[in-house]
Image 1 (cartoon, rainbow, N blue to C red):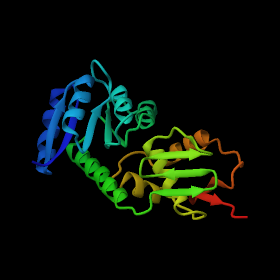
Image 2 (image 1 turned 30 degrees about the vertical axis):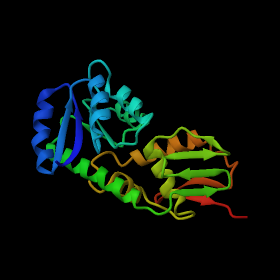
Image 3 (image 1 turned 90 degrees about the vertical axis):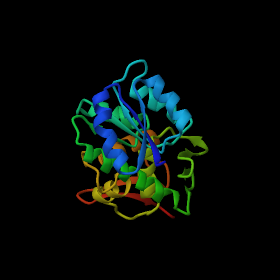
Image 4 (image 1 turned 90 degrees about the horizontal axis):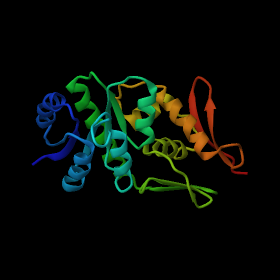
Length: 230
């Protein structure tokens, strides 16, 4: 059988539309119609990726994502019926890897799924898993960030953005480079999502020039992880 994908949506029509497209790509489809069933099916089948609708009975998608993230880094793509930034930000904050807004084309969903899985394979082949800069420690192997041995609560995407910047100290990385490397070349969302993640990173890391490193904006060019080696 192919790699398992869990499609959790209480709308049976959505599942019927997506299923043949995903099967054609070689995936085995597991379905769930409410949040509790999604949690059970995830534990039972251990899918390689979850397509998770936000608006579901019993437990909504945000609650399901939060619960899964307590013990798993399985890729999660959230599906929302609303295009406002609120749902998107909440989806990312709970640990989702990507989000899709309804209505969508099945082809778009397949492209997003393949892009996310490709990024996971790439990250797993990275030899270096830990980056240290004095008080800062980024461990991409277990998706953790610590400052002075205190764990900082960041989402997966925030950690990936920080990792990519810190992996190229004092080098300017454009928004497009960050988008393509972290979200994938098939990303259809708002390119300003990079700016949103940088803003949240600065707030959570409480960057006020108290360290010998910082995340700097280089106007019209992008961002860089600036390190003072003196």
